[in-house]
Amino acid sequence: MAVHQYEARCVCGNRWRVYRTAADDDEDPMATCINCGGPKLEPVQLARGGTVQTYVINHTMPAPFVAPLPIAVLDMDDGARLMLQVVGDGSDVSIGRVVRLVLRKYAHERGVPVYGFKAQPVRAEEKVS
Image (cartoon, rainbow, N blue to C red):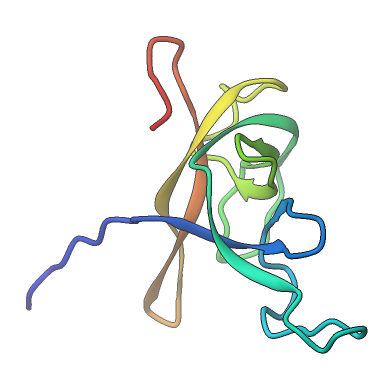
C-alpha cells in the first residue's frame, strides 16, 4: 500500500463581489444576486496567517473529538474572519496571538481520516509565510 503525503497549496474562500471583502465559504458558492441574477461570490485565496480575536477551550467534547479542544476566531491578514480548531491543548493561545493555518487530521470517521485546516500559534522568532 502506497502512502501519499499531500501538501496544502492554498486556503480558498469566497469574496462578496459587492463589498470586496474576503469571507469564508459559509454560503452556497452558486448563490445569485436577487437584483441582477449574477453570482454574488467569487473564489479567492485566503491568507495563511492572522491573529486570535477570541477563543474558548472546550473541556467536554463528544466523539470523535478529544478534550481539551481549543477553538479560536481568527482575523486573517487579508481581512477574512475564520473560526477554527487550534493545534494543541490551548495552553499557548491568547487574544492577539499570531497564528498560521496548517493542515492537520481532525478525526477518523467510519475508518477514514478527516483533514482540515487548524490554527497553529507562531513563536516570536518565526514568520508566517
